[in-house]
Amino acid sequence: MSTTLEVKLRTTASAFAPLIALLGTSPFRWYDTQLVQGSVFPAIVALLVSDPKSYYLGGRMNTSFARVQFTIWDTDAERGRSVEAALYDFLDVFNASGAPADRAKPNYVVGARGGMYPQTQPPQFQRIIDAKIFNNDTL
Image (cartoon, rainbow, N blue to C red; front, side):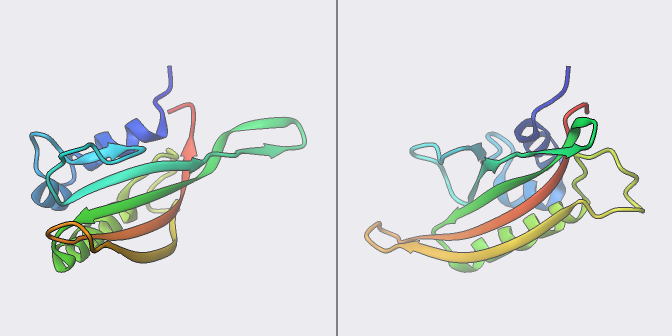
């Protein structure tokens, strides 16, 4: 049985020391789909936006370039940027494709932007990272 991309991401991220240092261990503040109410910051939400399968003339393949939106939440804008830097470092080494790491860099950040909710006290800052991740469903 294969593992979903969301599980691969969270499991691997929870063993990545720079993210552990920022997101803690109990709980590791990495969530799927949406932020958990009452969550301590900083936190990351990984939302699978799309996962279209790759095709060739003979049919559907086991691989895809999934789009994942990572939203970093924090009440400290500079610390949020530190989480963003750690996330970039994580994506540089994360491999959900099974391809030899020395031959391919299977992940691409295709967009990054910021946001803020000023009505909360303290304000909540966001960094939103849009990434393409090469995934192999059979792993």
